[in-house]
Length: 176
Length: 214
Image (cartoon, rainbow over all chains, first blue to last red; front, side, top):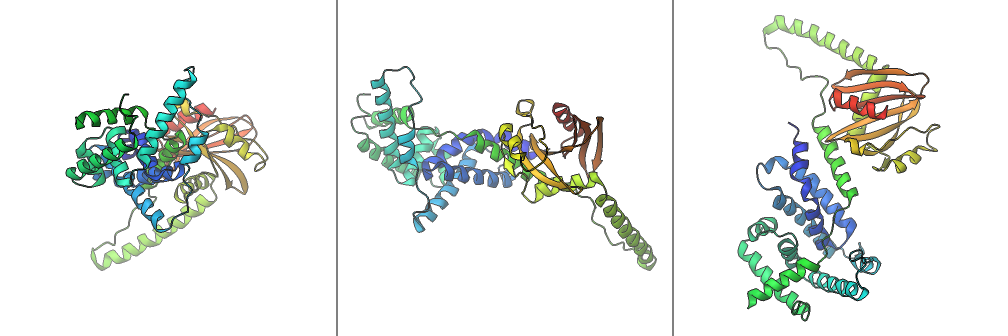
């Protein structure tokens, strides 16, 4: 009877995926939280329109629309939010790999930073397909649904993103 | 060849790129928002729409009689509500949901909510953490009832919000349940405090919460 409980069961489990996508797109924890919270409210309002469909691409579609709207607003009125990525990189202690040898931890951290930086350097439409494909494991069809683009465009964006990443990560992705 | 490269690149990204995790605070905020939205969507209506009867002149006189008595009942009802603590509590519960002013201090941490009341009230209401029992704390609010400031604690149960009003009172009294405008209420006195729990959650679940609060 209560659709709210149904909503929590079907949509809330995708919170981490929603936040990961938003965080990668807007580069700021607080903005990403706002984007996700607003997306959930919209999703709840239009929950009836989902019917029996898969909630994950549906929710992520709302999240990415919010993020691209925000990015567009930033482009028109820049400088309102300071991106906190750099700050986080300097503050974040390596929490994984306790007890590992310091050299290995450093390697791990450096690899993480290079990979993150390379993805971050992609333009949002390309970053979006990389995050959805590689980090969220979504299919081409699902990505096409989320970004509201043809599957062919998903594939060409992914291919261009990959060639940019290969250039940026040269030396890293070989000889792993 | 190129596909092998893609494969390796995918492996590198999957192994090393940061996966950002939503904070528990974000999850709580979203759950509370949903509970609020859902509470306002299913708010019980106190009066049903009244239709003008179509059975001719005789009916008009009759209808006028009905209108007059309906107005009198409505006025009397409001009068009764105004002078009635249960009505006041229910109105406060509904107002808190409607006005989007549910909490003055929004926190699921009872160690944040309890000290917040200090300095705002001359007493310190007990603020237990009941998340493990299915009633996460949403926050606290200062409310004004029967010419005094009272503590309102807000708990959530699934998609229902519950207001628990607490103020000092002497004597112990057992729990009594009532229904007002479609909302369930439970009242009791214990440990120098009077408690009122108000919600649209069903009566047995509200009783469960009141037993957890003692």
